Image (cartoon, rainbow over all chains, first blue to last red):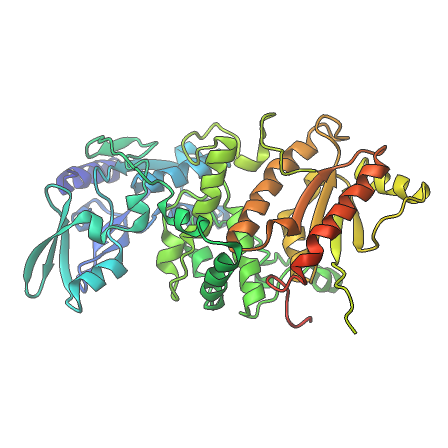
Length: 343
Length: 142
């Protein structure tokens, strides 16, 4: 079990010695008892830090933001930032390192092991509690979560309220870290791609029916893009406002910029957007499930990304996010890659 | 009056092999269906997944990407990258429910005019029974 005291002591040590600029961690939101991201800048603030089953956010997104912020500063503070990562989040860092977006010396990684459980799914928990508000959620013994509500304390089996991605997790221990808290437990994942297996049994027509119903709901808020640590392109094909415009950009250039897809949230354009996102995340998505959590209309976005993760594994033997020295999925090939689909 | 459905196929042909192959089919006066809209690209590896999505979005009934045979790429290994990248695209399209026949790849060398006509003939034959592609098509242009 990860002890809060250990995390706090490590944070205090790093901040007092000035090794890190600040620490990105979790704190408990007093209003609903769930974790929220927090930036700890002073050693006195370390008591805020928490670690519980509601720490579902992927804090690596803030490392991406930090790099942007640093690029804009004239005399940036070059010390690393500290970041608390779970197993999945650490793999997001591996991808950023692999793509040379960040440098290893820019981050001080504090790894926490999810051990045999994981983090909760808010929607599953809300369903389980039938309208009651959870005030506090803790890791309990024997793969249980201890949920405190106004009416008392209940022990809920982790498997019932855990996020789907945690049920399919193959690496609950951070892949890279400077310091690691929690036990290095092994777990068996009988169905690592369980969520896509269901769709694969459907016929093409039924698959289309499922996805068109789901993607029709999309309102194109781009929440999935904003929350994703891998979506760091300066220019995104999905909307023209991200195109870089400098004083040198001519009116012609602005007008002739290719508009791949329409901004209006109609089904054909929604599907286009989600296809582009899925293919751009192929071999990069580490299944932190943030897109699905951020989605205001509950589109099962993980199922798109997970499918390509599965194909990468099955067709090309590619494991996503384990080795920062490996080339990206589509910037390498093997001679024995399947080619039987080609005439 | 029942008019037979004629599928519209967008073909991305690599400049060095497949496009030359289609040229050979032309100058040799080989006959093949007129359903294909050829687009010459420098290499099959330069075909971005965006091109394929966009083709379907703008109303293509089928998309073909054709390049040099493995080992014959003008840029040494562009077609090998294409093979990996476009297989992922194919898998994604199928995952969303698009019929697998709608997106295909072929290797056609500059000497294979005959093979090019064969590929197009087969493609048209497979696409005819499927009817128009409406799933990914944009409803209102503009």
